[in-house]
Image (tube, rainbow, N blue to C red; front, side):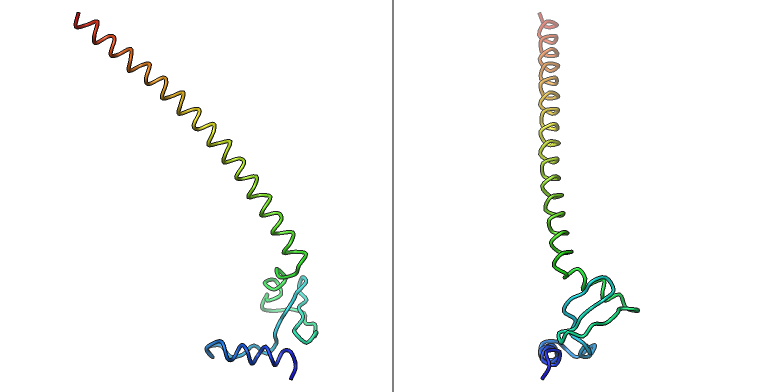
Length: 113
């Protein structure tokens, strides 16, 4: 039994037969080239399956994950800076409003006397 046949048997045992068992078990891809579990190489000319499976290519995946992690760290740092600026701005606004409130109270007290 070939590796593809083994994977087809697992597929058939695990999934409902809505779409049938795939005729090949693709395990890796590069660009528009894909390989099945038995090492056969195919060129994807129609469905775009190679695009999806190419993401599984180690080099592409590692690069994407590293880039994503770097971007996430940069976004987190930027968010922290923006939060600090926003907090500082609101603190300044709060102090200004307190001063205005105090001035109004003094004016009201002076008007009573």
